[in-house]
Amino acid sequence: MNVILFGATGMVGLGVLRECLLDPGVARVLTVGRSATGQKHPKLREVTLPEMLDYSSIERELTGFDACFFCLGVSAAGMSEDAYRRVTYDITLAAARTLVRLNPAMTFIYVSGASTDSTERGRAMWARVKGSTENALLRLPFKAAYMFRPGVIQPLHGIRSKTEWYNTFYTVARPLLPLLRKLAPRYVTTTELVGRAMLRVVRQGAPSPIVENAEINRLGQ
Image 1 (cartoon, helix red, strand yellow):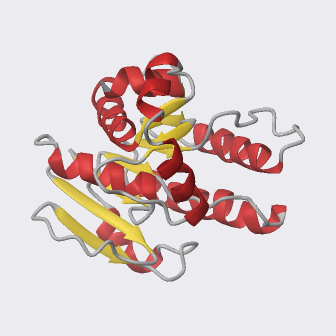
Image 2: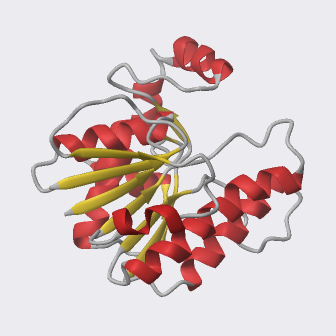
């Protein structure tokens, strides 16, 4: 399996990258982002792209892939809807439209979030924009597309969030999160389970294109 990974420097992306590099069935991983992870591995190639809305300069690099794991995202806190939509919708769809043209047999997996609004009409701005993004991705002619909707994601293996208050939360909640994951699998998962679930879905599919937190945990076991 050859994999493209967007957002590999973020908390979720780092977890997914780790699982891809560990998986013997993954032959090649290409990361695309504004900055590189700095990791070195025989499977790994990293491409930096300052402008994430235009992929014409790197199209030669983007062919021959079986899967895309799109983990790029930002918190909506303090952002206007237009600014949040530019990052969440515009960048995602620019990448997806390029990839589906170059790799029509690709499986595309997008990291969305629990409580995303598929109707696009709810009160929560971030949920509307995420829902709009999901719906647009599901209309593209990929071999398959899946929208992952994790809840609270516990970072493992030394991975940290770029958002400092998330790290504070994880530090305080760390003793409780494993218990909560067992008692409330609908709400809590880990970076490891998300990465493993993505790889399994590419190989075996999933019952629904919308993959909620409990299903992520089941698939990632």
